Length: 443
Image 1 (cartoon, rainbow, N blue to C red):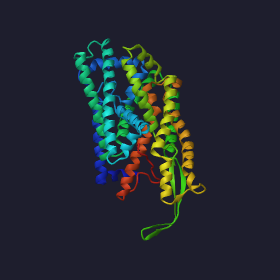
Image 2: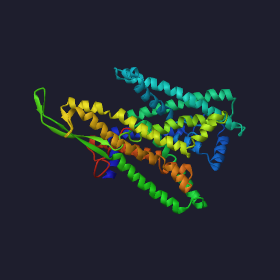
Image 3: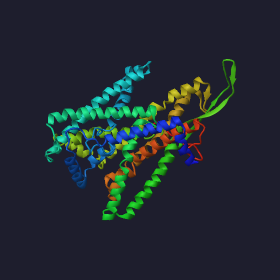
Image 4: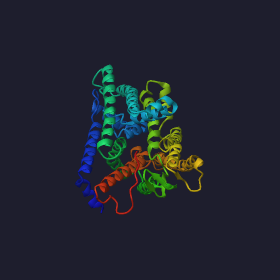
């Protein structure tokens, strides 16, 4: 029973320690999102963003959404984990473009070297974005006189150091959760930031319905859409295409192993929510630079207006990047050449397919799966914009009712539950579900 499984989580020592450690790290993360950087007058800052919220600023809402509410607080975690994700994308691309880097990653200890380069690159990205943040604070201080409590030069240096340290500390928390906790640490940090905004969004929704700003019928329609999309996302995340593989009899040492029939499970969406997170991160980086420094540079202000999250250009780029990263990440994680090589080396074959054409067959199957899967992700990702345009929903609510947040919440939840279930069964306990099996993915 599910209730016994929940009790069993705390009966198993290893699982109990992992869950408690993960909870503690997430509490530290949430505390950091409300801890302001030195030199900021919190009252003046809150008054400014309250006025901005009333006037509506889609770019600030978007940046604040991905920072888990830390951006509008000017907290030590205001950049969130996105600089690390941006640098990981850049590093993956560099490994493909430069064969020497690829060779280093395949050597003994090469992965640690690549991770070291990635950390150094993350610091550089953080310094660039943190400098943009200080310029944004300077532009706010022109309208809010008592916003900064120290000279601009001192504030710039301290803020850049504080915010960069905050992101690197978040990166460390994510690694510790992955190693000593439950689930993927980086994904859980993004998940926690989204979930933490749910109560405020629900209260804002109730307030707007009471005041008459939102039609109750529209709210019910959107809620039904939300439930239906969650159901479809769960099916899509767990759906798979099974490729049958037949292994002939073989001799290993003095033992003979009989023929085996198995299959390769190709997910309908092999890359999970990675394309959405990558696309969001790639767009967030120039958007943040343009929106924060745009007040001082004319062409950056034009870029900021063009990349409005509710605009056509942004959403077109968003869809194209999701499709691109779906193919890119699938080729990195599920390389048909490597899979075919492993099948041949182990004496396997796919019924009806010649041995020398296995790569071609697997590539064809993957391409057929990835395209509809990536388009499905893209449709869900642009759903918040559609909800805002059709039903006049505020960004804080529409971002949580669909799009990236929905995919991340469902994907991370399934992945974490599958790990908990695996640990429970390893210690001879029942799983979290009465029937079936949870299938998660490493995000």
